[in-house]
Amino acid sequence: MRLLHTSDWHVGKTLKGRSRLDEQEQVLREIVTIAREQEVDAVLVAGDLYDSAAPSPAAQQLVVRTLMGLARDADASRSPATTTTPRCSTPTARWPARPGSRWSGPCARPTGAAWSS
Image (cartoon, rainbow, N blue to C red; front, side, top):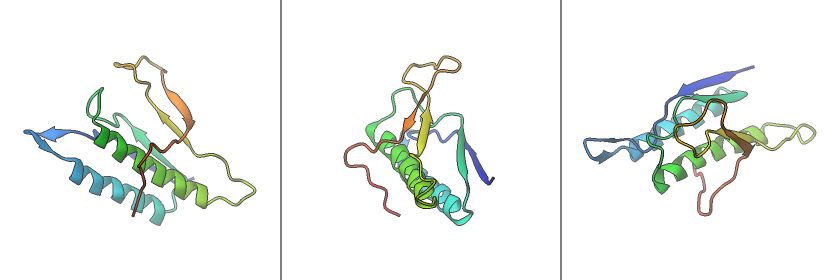
């Protein structure tokens, strides 16, 4: 099994009042590219996806586009006999998250979110 381990994306983080979303998008695109090129079986994100408990819509859209791009690649690499719905697992909306609290279900694309590589 090939695993790509990442951590603490902190999407939505600003530095001295300056948005870092453009830089974060470049890094997340690189993660998707590495996952494709290395034909990984799973991508692990340990730690925080967002920098705050209330991420901006732009930060949320970037994370969802990235996860959907990874899920689409995983789905396309399976033979029709083994195709299953890609799964996403993220902390619940509660902050701070309680140990073991999480949402796990099919990846869902919000309206208007499309990954273009």
